[in-house]
Structures are given as structure tokens and as C-alpha cells.
Image: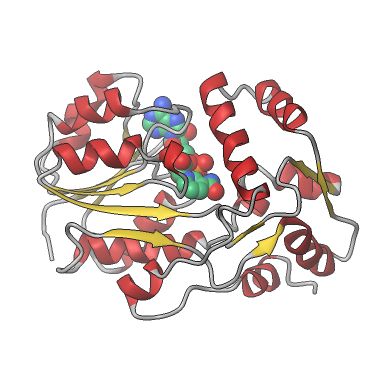
Amino acid sequence: MTESPILVLGATGKTGRRVVTRLRDLGLPVKAASRSGETRFDWDDPTTWDAALDGVSKLYLVPPPLSADPTQEITALLQKFSGHVVVLSARGAGFHPAEDVVRKLAAEWTVLRPTWFFQNFNEDLFAPAVEAGELALPAGDGSEPFIDADDIADVAVAALTQDGHAGQTYDLSGPESLTWAEAAAHIERALGRPFAYRACPPEEFHASLTAAGVPEDLTELLVQSMLEIAGGESAYLSDGVQRALGRPPRSFTDFVTATWPSA
Ligand SMILES: NC(=O)c1ccc[n+]([C@@H]2O[C@H](COP(=O)([O-])OP(=O)(O)OC[C@H]3O[C@@H](n4cnc5c(N)ncnc54)[C@H](OP(=O)(O)O)[C@@H]3O)[C@@H](O)[C@H]2O)c1
């Protein structure tokens, strides 16, 4: 275990927040960093980087969230850091530039490559749709083995605090593949009010992301991810949670029941 601080980027986000809590529960020193975090870190303002990295031996790297290709930013950051990097990547080759540059430049690295998170439904992108009662995506009737951000955080903390995870790429999925309609039906039952999935044309999703201020290149990547799901390319399960933690991942139904306990 390390005594110098661990720097957690994206520390107010869905995985970063959970990583910070777990590390502190272990009694480890943590710098919780983001634009609005305890430690100020802004990918768009490199003058904030040196103070954030000062004294740090390990790094949980959440790439700049609005960048489709963060190679430049990560390259510049890793020129200033020589410890173990645990990087949050994603399933789908379009998301892999971040992990490629970490593998190339970091002294030690661990790659986490998750599917779409459960917590998009209650903490982020799809929460307004849950409120409104309808989620429209160009994912057809394809299925996705959604994953719990708590499982991702558990794997990240294992990689940051235990031996044996350097050089590993963990493909992380939940224990079952669900169509978006099935996921919506689970949530609807728990909510006790209407919530349905509607398969929409890619142009409609594209327009909604543009209206939400998502940059064009990332919008295209997210549309591509949905089309891959529609084509059945993302239905397969991955065993990264079992490999890293020796236990199975948490199920979507357990998440739904815990999140909307009126079920
Ligand atoms: N969501 C999913 O289902 C999913 C699935 C697979 C992979 N991923 C990957 O997870 C990563 C995080 O995405 P997310 O959507 O889950 O977001 P998130 O981690 O929940 O939130 C984004 C985090 O980044 C921080 N941030 C935003 N802009 C920043 C900037 N310019 N400089 C420094 N920090 C900044 C935010 O805090 P402040 O606002 O305080 O700066 C926040 O802590 C992405 O690389 C994505 O590809 C996500």
C-alpha cells in the first residue's frame, strides 16, 4: 500500500466519486480532483496540473469527458507523471485512443474497459428520460450487458492498492445482457409509473446530443456505440470483474431495487 496520495480525476463523477470514497474508507490519502473538486484539475487548463500531481504515486485517470480523442491531453499529462495509471476506457474500439496512449506512455498501467453504466439511468445522461417517461435511442432491439459503477470502482481500487493488476486490461460487463426495453421495464416496475424505451432513428439521438451541447465528434462516437448495440455487437458478457475481484458483478435488477426501493 502507498503512503503518498493517489490522484483521482473525475472525482465528482460516477466512478471517480466512488473510487474516492473507497480509498478513504481504506485510510489512504487521496486527492479528489476535477474542475469543481477538492483539488482543482481542469483538462483545459494545464496550469492546474502540477499542483494536482505533486507528490502523487498513483493515478485514476478519467479522460476528458467531452473529448472523442483525448490523446493530446493524456500525452501532455503523462509527461509529468511516472507512476501507476489506472485508466477508465470503454467497450467499443472508437473509445480506445485514451487507453492506447496510457499503455504507450505510463510506467505501469491498468485498463478498465466497461460497458454502459447502470447509473446513467439515475445519475446522468438518461435520468431526465426516466423522469419524462420515455427513453429514445437508436439501439433497436439490441442488448447491452450494463455494468454497475460500484463494480468499476471496486476494480479501480483493487488495481490502485493491490499487486498483480499492472499490465492488465479488464473488460468489464454486468452479469446479463438486456435490451433497452427490458432495462426500461425493470425500472418502470420499480418506479410504479410509466417508463418505456422507444427505438428512434440515429438522427433523432444525434440532434438530442447536439442540443445538450455534446461536441460533434463525441456525438458521432455515441451514435456509433448505439448502432453497434443495435447490430448485436455489444451483447457479449465480459469477465473482468471476476478476474480482478474473484466475484461476480452486481445485477441490474439489484441496482433497480436499491435505487427505486418503492418496488
Ligand atoms: N457513462 C457511461 O456509461 C460510460 C461507459 C463506459 C465508459 N465511460 C467513460 O467514462 C468516462 C467518464 O464519463 P462519464 O460520462 O461517466 O462522466 P463522469 O465521470 O460521471 O463525470 C465526468 C467527471 O469529469 C469531470 N470533468 C468534466 N470536465 C472536466 C474537465 N474539463 N477537466 C477536469 N475534469 C472534468 C467532472 O467534474 P467537474 O465538472 O467538477 O469538472 C466529473 O467528475 C468517459 O471517458 C467515458 O468514455 C462512460
